Image 1 (cartoon, rainbow, N blue to C red):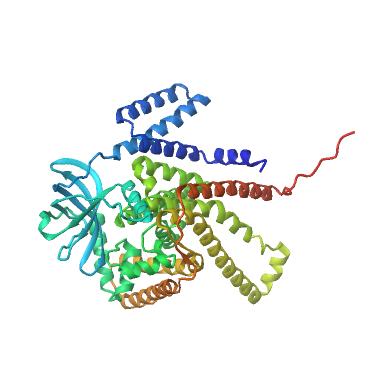
Image 2 (cartoon, rainbow, N blue to C red):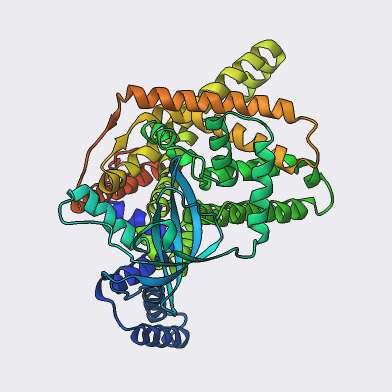
Length: 532
C-alpha cells in the first residue's frame, strides 16, 4: 500500500486520457446537477482554451486544459437538456420511430425521437407503447395528437422509481400510449444505405427457413434487429447471463474484427498489404456498426478496434486503457446523457476489468507451461506427444482464459446491475466459455452468408445456424429455469460507490504486484546491510 500512490501516478502518466476522461465526467455531472446557463459554460470553455494556449508547456497550461475539458463536458450536457414540462394536455407531436420490439403478438414497444411539439423544435426521446391494431415501422415519421405521460406514479416501489429515473436520464421524457385514432399523418422517411443494407440482410436470413426462436437470435446478433425477440426468450437470456449477446455490442464488433482480419490474411502478404487490410477492416467495422444502429457500446467498440487495427498496421504498442478512456471521453462529449446509459456504463466497466484484471492473470497462466529450449527440442522430436501436449495446453488455456474474463466482467458489473435492475446473475461466469464461442460462430456464419453474392451453400448455412442457435437457446432456457445462481438483490447508490472504490484500490494493489513480478523483485523489502 505504501507504493500505491506512485504506482497510480505512473499508470496515469502512461495513460493520460484517464485525466481527460475524469475532467469530462466532472463537467457533465456539474452541468446536470446545477444546470448553469449555456452561455456561461461556453464562455468558460473559450477562456480556458485561450489560457491553455498562453500557458502551454507548464503546469498551469495543463490545469487550464483540464478545466477546458470539464467545460466541454458541461456544454455536452447543457445542449442535450430540455426544459419541456409534462402536463395533462394533448399536443401535436412529430415523431421519428427508432427501434421497435414486440413484447406481445398484438402490441409493440418502440423508441420515438421527438422532432417537433406544436411546431416547436425538440430533441429528446419518448417510449411508445401501442394498442392492438397499431403497427409501427423503424425509420418512419408520424404525427400524433397525444399526451406525453410520466413514467412513474406515487404508489410504485423504489426499484421501479429508480428505473424511471434511469430512463429519464437516458433522454426519455416520458411515454406515450398510442392508439390508432391518435395518428394524424404517417410519412415514410428516406431509407439510408445502412437501413437498406439491414433490410436486405434481414430478407436474406429469412430465406434460410430457420425456426422462429433461432431466427430471432440470428437477426439480433448479426444485424442488430431485435424486433422478433419474444419476452420469454429475452427473459431466458437475461437470467442465464447472456443478455449482452442479443444486443450488438463490443463483443459482436470483436467477432467482425477477427473475421475480417482472418479473411484478409492473404492480402497482408502483398506489397502495402497491411495498409489495404487495415483500411478495409476499419471500413467494414464502421459499416457493421452503422448498419446495426450505432448504439453507444457499438460505437465505443468500433473506435477501440479501429485504433487497434491502426496499431497493428504501424506495429506500434496498443494502450488499451488509454484507448478506452479516449473513447469514453469522445462519447460523453458527443452526448453527455451517455453517463446514465446502462449499456455504455456496463460495457466500459467490463472492458476495464478485462484490460486491468483479466489480461494480467491470463499472461501469468501462459508462464505455467513455459519450457526451456532443450525441452522444446526434445518434445518436437516426438511429434505425436508434441501435438497432444500442445492441444491439451491450448484447450486448458482457452478454458481458463474464458473463465477469468467472464469472472472479471461479472464481478465489476455486478454492483451496477444490482443498483439499476435489482438482479444479479452468476450464470454468465459458467455459460460464457460456451455461449461466447457459439455466438462467434453464429455471427461469422451469418455475415459470410450475407456477404455471399449467391447462395450455393444456403442449405448448409441454414442447418449450421439452426444447430448452433438451437444449442444457445436450449442452454439459456435451461439456466433460466434452473435459476440456482440468479438472485434479486438491490443496493443503494452509496453502497455501489463504496464497492467501486474498493475495486479501484484492489486494481492499484494488483498493479503493484504485477510490476514487482515483471521486475523480478520480492514482495517484501529486503533489508540492505548497514555500512560500517
